[in-house]
Each structure stands twice: as structure tokens, then as C-alpha cells.
Length: 540
Image 1 (cartoon, helix red, strand yellow):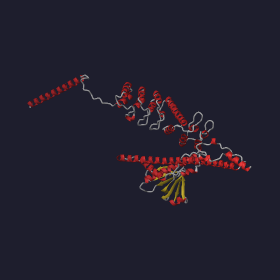
Image 2: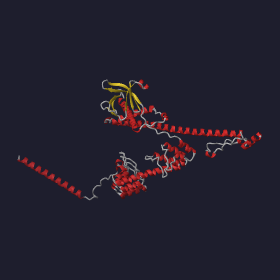
Image 3: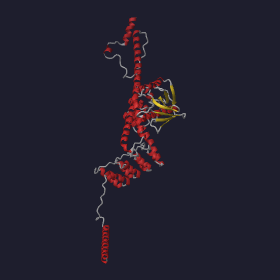
Image 4: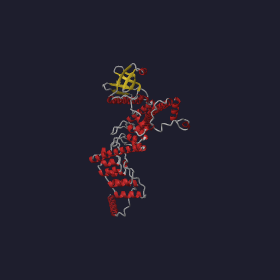
């Protein structure tokens, strides 16, 4: 027994000794590794950055020397670099430099043709960032490089809207006024010179000038084009809705200053009235709920802000036997969340009425179409009750909307609004996103087609009226020629008749009247004085 106990003690001692030796060995290794120099330590791998990443980092940290060296290598062709590269959240180097206030780096980037109007993922430009952080020097620098002060971000705010510094706000406001005056001056100068391309670019720009702006004498662009005889510019300005009734400081309109007859004819044409959107007629079968009788089918017509009810469609065609009607001005419409086919209208007299579309396959789409049309008539009725409905030209009735296209547009918009209201489930998210995108494209395309149809119709009517005015002018000219010819014949017959008044040929346009005696026909004709003398001697 004592022998076994001794063996255990020896084993324990050996184990403890070996553990102590291992601990000492580990301590020695750690000590020597700590005392090693940097040259003896293994080098850690350094991540390799691209020139764009390096430029973004240096612009953010304000490393002017590093940024200058990097841009120098780029200008010498040693490296390829995009100065408008984008990093996180689509921030460019110019965004970083403007936000953190590195003025020298901003100047370097602009010298290398960095875009001063580039936007990030939220629509902010470098001017937004400089104004937000109250960097007045950077705001002045960006404005001197033609930064656009009218660009709005995703929240609809310009650089002036997000700025909290009053001095910078005044600076941006002055820049907006200066930009407007500059564009107005460019429009007037282009109208005088007859530069149609510049005028088109200005009017189609994101921030077009005021087409009715005037110079120091009160002359609008139409005045300038008229007294210079720029017929093409006059037509372009009329097509873009310039006011022909404007007068300058001397009380003259553009037609009073017209240089030549064609320009005066164009300005004398009565302009086509601007197209006003009206509420389209909509009708169909829906269910109306009564307190005692429950749901009952009625044929409903929406027309000019009035909701009329008939028993059948046949009654609606004749307009007789109308069972009721409601004015939609000031009304409100709400969809029933518990039933996809039901909606409620609260009229202006505080009465409430529930309606339902027929139980069909696309009841949710049908309900949305009814709600869209009712909302359109509510806005139409409320608008004209507040502003008054002016008498329209009977010729405006000739502009007929394309019915099929309008119906398809309403259906597409109803589908689109349903897709936007109902959030898709996660498991079918991708499919629904594709459908929403397709519906949005269809709706946008149909809306664009409808707009093109209406614009073409307006242009056609304008051209038709111009042709009618030209025909009237030619008829007057022919009538005047016929009278002069008749007076000339009378002078040949009666020598005692007083000679007709000599026509004022200088008042006519040489392009529109021709000599009646040209070529061989003039050689065979005797002079007028000889014919008169011959008649006198014969009578004697």
C-alpha cells in the first residue's frame, strides 16, 4: 500500500514539474516575440485601393497634397481616374469636399472638370451640402462655376430650402433672381436675332424663362420678333402660349410693330384657346344601398360634376325618368376596407350613400375606376364653382377625346393604384414588383399618347385658322383687282369719264401681285393714251 502511495506522489511531482517547464517556455517565446523589431515582424497585407477609392478617401479627409498628386498623375496620363466617381450613397469626391469644407480640394476638382450639378442617391448636389453645412465660401465658389440653384432633391427642396444660414439664403435667393434675369435676357436676344434653336432649348429646359418677360421698353419676345420680321420665331412663340395682348410702354401690341405683311397676318390670327382638362363622362351599372330595400341596381351617369341615377340604360339615353341626382362639389369618397367592391360617398349636404360595383371577376379594379372617375368630377365641380365657368368657343366642341384610349388609360391607372396600395407579400415580392413596373409603364405610355393626341389636335386647329385667314386675305386682294379691272374697262369705253384712281402699288407685296401684261401679250396691246385719242377723234 505504501508502495502505491509513493508511486502516485512521484507521478504527481513529475506532472507538476513538466507543466511548470511548459509555462516557462511559453513565457520565453512571448518575451522574445515582444522584443522583436518592426523589421523582424512579418508584414501584414495592405489592401490595395483603386484610384477612385483613393480620391474619395482623400477628398473626405482633406488630404490636399495627396489629392493634388493624384490629380497630377491623372492629368499626365499615368493613371486612369474618374473625378465624378461615386462611393457610398452615390457621394462623389465633390460631395465629400463640400460637406467637410475642404475649399482647396473643391477648387482642384472643379479645375479637373468635376460636375458641379451631380446628385447623390437622395438628389442632393454639392451645392446642397455646402449650403446645409453653412460653407459660404464654397457656395460662392460653386455659384461662380454655374451651379444650378433650382435643382431639387428627393424631398423637393432646393439648396436654399435646406440652408439655415440667413446670409447664405440671401445669397442663393439673389442667385436665383440673377439666373431668371439671365435666361429672360437670352430669350429676348434670341427673339431679336431669330435664333429658333436657342429659344427651343430655353423653353424646353428644366427651368424655362418667363415667356412673357419684357425688356426696358416693355417689349416682349413677340414684339422683338415682330419688328424684326422673324416669322419663324413668331410661330414658335405662339405655339408655346405667349400672350399676344401684351403692350409695351407706348401702348403698342406686337401686331402694331409687325415689319411685313406675313408677320402681321400671323399675329392677326385669333389664338387657339388653351386646352382645359374636363371631367370625362362615365357611366355604368352599380348597386346603391337603401335603408329599407337593401342593395338595388341603378344605371349611374357621371357628367359635369353631377351624379345621376336611372332605372335602366334605355332611360339614360333619353334623359327622362331620372330617379335622382347628386352634386359632387365638396364631396368625399372613401373605400370600404372590409369589402373590395364597396365605397362610400359623403356629399356636401352631409348625406352619406354606399355603393357597390357588381360582383364580377375584377370588382376591385372596377371599384377603383369608379372612384377615380368620381374624384375627377369632384375636382371639376369644385374648381368651377370657385372660379366660375366661362363660355367656351363652340369650335372647342370639335376636339373629341379618343374614347378607347381614355378607357384603357382609366383601367391601367386603376390597376396601378391597386398595386401601389396593396403591399406585396415577401414570398411573391419579385413577381409583384415586376407587375407594378409594367403597369406603371403602360399607364405612362398611354398618358403620353393621350397628351400627344390633344397637342396634335390643337396644332391642327391653329394651322387651320391660319389657312382660313390667308384665304380671306387673298379673296380681298382678288376683289380689289376685279374692281380695278372694271374701272379700267370703263375708262376705255367713255373718254369723258374721270380716270380711275391710280392704285397704290407700293402698299402691296410684290410676292403676291403680278403684272397683267407680261411677255408677248403686252406687245400686242396699244397704249392707253392712243386708245383715248382714237375714241375722241372718232366722236368728233
